[in-house]
Image (cartoon, rainbow, N blue to C red; front, side, top):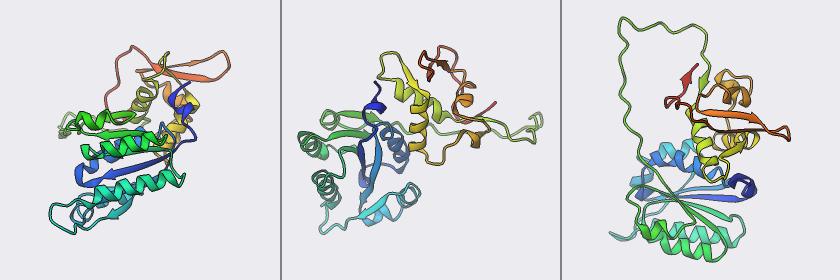
Length: 253
């Protein structure tokens, strides 16, 4: 049984320490926690200068509730306390049983331990700088690496003209999802229907038809890195194959 099967009914809270991390981490965190259940609480905590500048676009676009915390005295971080109190309140109210804290601040290690003592599952999504004290206080730690800068290549005179018809695309998010969901399975295999549910949780607008395919199964069969097979019970599964990996990005067929 995979992680998704075990945690389909879990209610997940994603609580972000905006003062301590980058907005670029947010989409990665949502992709990670989608395998554990339904995200019912999305909140970002920070002071005015943090939320009103670099975090505003990301919080609005990804439907997070901004939780503004004023600093009553210099050097005092009220955001951490607000995040901790809201987490405990959500646990005691029975609204949430799984937490994802997006932070690299070791001050949250004690909160993680208290939540786990009360029966909650705690995941941390943080950067490389995250200290061991916080990593080890969680049930599972997911390290986020900033993406490599993309260098655009200008089209030269020899560049081929693109066809007028829209090409079929292979989103790299599908490969990432299969890698994530099969990582802890003994056979390295995930049910196609389960994969589809995960992809819709990470992106409610996801549809193979949007990328020019008739369905998820037909889309999966176009990936060189994936192997799709029908099991004895009639259901389809997908696993990573040993063939060369497709390039990152949405690749036209």
